[in-house]
Length: 212
Image (tube, rainbow, N blue to C red):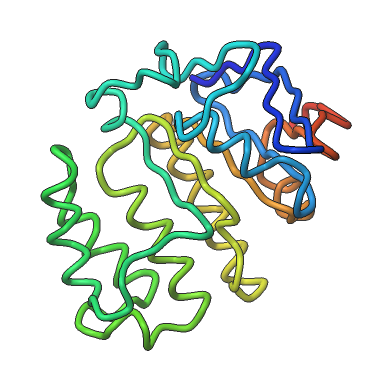
């Protein structure tokens, strides 16, 4: 699903160098502190920036030239993005329906209820945890083959974080979703992911199977 081979990207004095692979049907945790290179990895995968060296392949395509069809097969939840606070969850539903050909309205409504996200309340009135849940939900409701989750448990209490991680496991087991979880949260990654890559100062510090 994702292959990063001999990738090198430089920002000023910071150099990001990595080779890693996320096979189809696997849950992989990419762990690192702030500034370790996690955001750079996401940008390279989504084609939001280009590497000076190496190749990044996503769903069989070069990340620099992702077609609309491939983009429809990717579900992304970014920690630093979100919808306008003036919108409601119901507004978000209508936006997603226009964005994604395979948007599942019934699933969206059901999961909104399960996650306790009121349909007609403005997002600016949501707690940090509720906003995190909504970001994750928007990435999961168009039957994407690949899910990229950036800090999905941020702002959630311990039980909420466990529930969120279990949701990814369930999506993986029931529907065969491939999941990349990018986070600084070592505890939950070790508990729920099959494989873990630890990045530090732009390089892989450790790469190991967790549940083999």
